[in-house]
Image 1 (cartoon, rainbow, N blue to C red):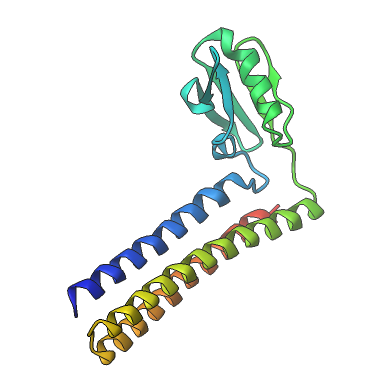
Image 2: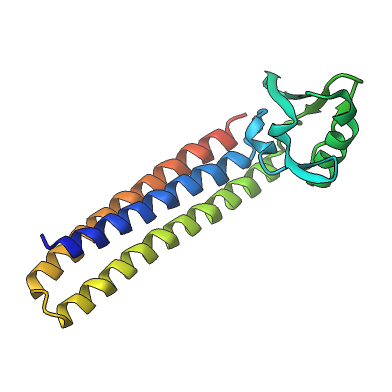
Length: 187
């Protein structure tokens, strides 16, 4: 296979893989009824005037399935951490006992579970769109290369290979979404 064709195939594969990684990161933020420290990944704390990720100013643990404990490395950070969690609008009411900020994760209602499944599917659809865009971009490049002298059968083989790759990554997205839906709907 032509070296340039291979380069575009590898690029498409990398973009598709990035879509899967992004999907997994986004789904980790959607809570499934049990405590998950990844829910706090996007929380930024005002650390002496600088917005800093919560994980860089505190230790985040899950002592039991319904609680997330945030222990700051400096006691003076308790109030800013509590405020940052409230401002992040995650639906939690953090409790500060003077040493640790505790977050009780309430059980999900059936209605909320269905909303979260819907949200998960939306994130999954975005991943599929990214995968299809990577396929489209690669196929467009192959068509340009045919105009520049690439044999048409090589282009068709590459398009078939890209389609197989796209189908494979779409299947991965579906499998991830099925697992997430199972996690969310399990009480």
